[in-house]
Length: 353
Image (cartoon, rainbow, N blue to C red; front, side, top):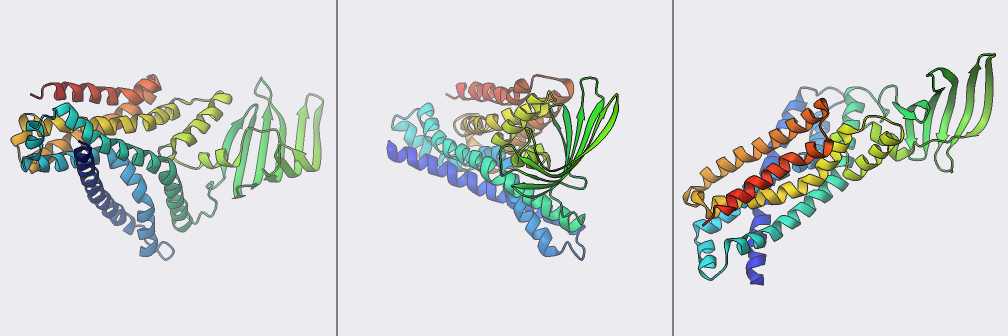
């Protein structure tokens, strides 16, 4: 029995990775062709190819759900065509038991997808976009032209650039009172995050009151702030490229400063729902192999699987965006497509005879 578990799980994993490789290669070619029109003296063909390589992990992560369904259809369908699954059933194994064996491969793939999304995609996406911006837009600052703006309690902070993880340059802090009146404007040449609390260096500020304004100068000043280098870096990254841990930290910052976090909460729960969707896609492949479509050709099964996978991807993306626009609970926004997929999968498996 253990040998059958390993055999089915290996079949699923190999075929899913094969499909994922093909889909990723197609996406890479499309990305590279679209980048050719941006080629210039600074942004060469080599840099366009390098950008495409850095975008590969993100493309793999996006297409993983579709790849699991197609790979499972391809692998299990091949076993069905050779009557191997029929022999297993005649030997006394139920469809549920065979599905459980295939799910072992799905669990390994889900773990791989989670590691890809948490450890590889954020760094790869940020490096790709920073390098492209530097060469195409002549932007050497990773935080972009003008840096980033952030709300920090009752202050609004503008950080122009990050030299490294411990040092930022060009810090503008604007303090307001509960009536939204400006009470203090401060500029610091640099902020050092290697101490607690962080230190502002070469500080020049203007304190305003009813009695008038007062200019202050300090060489070093402690900075009571909720900002840190990791959080500042998150401002410069698209939310779709953030890991679940990065989104969690960012949501905490938004809540602490009473800012709208609905979009990021939906993205966070979407990350958690993705591994579940992968496993459900594997379950959905079983009716194609054991059900009424078992006599269909491999091409027909792959076509139906591709349509289902694309439909789920489009519906999930559209519902995520619609939920943010119309104020739907972000947990519902993230999990409803996956729950619908689960209902459909269980219903389809239940009809297998």
